[in-house]
Length: 124
Image 1 (cartoon, one colour):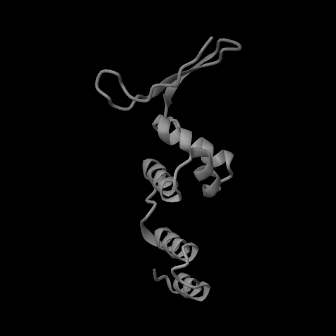
Image 2 (cartoon, rainbow, N blue to C red; image 1 turned 60 degrees about the vertical axis):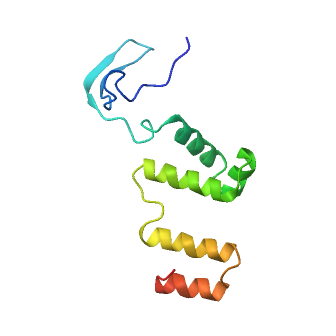
Image 3 (cartoon, rainbow, N blue to C red; image 1 turned 120 degrees about the vertical axis):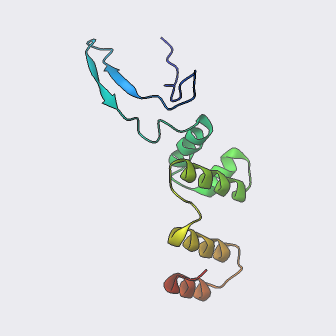
């Protein structure tokens, strides 16, 4: 039997669907209640595919770049879009500043000493 991905939006009004019944195909038991799907179950296919590849490559963005045949900035943009879809802000706050510093270091725009100083001082 071929199974399809669980729908997460109502086909009539596009509102998020709620899970009310869980079924065991082995014994036929059913559990009724109100269940919240996890955040990964609610991701659109393109984000879920990217997440699977990201995990498969153990977070190696260069490997993701190679497999997808796209540029590093495109991979970063897709990762940032995934983080936003999960409710995390990819470019905001301390984490975003830290990433900016590390990217500038990777591109050779700043020295190691400058990167260390910025990371310690919280400046980008």
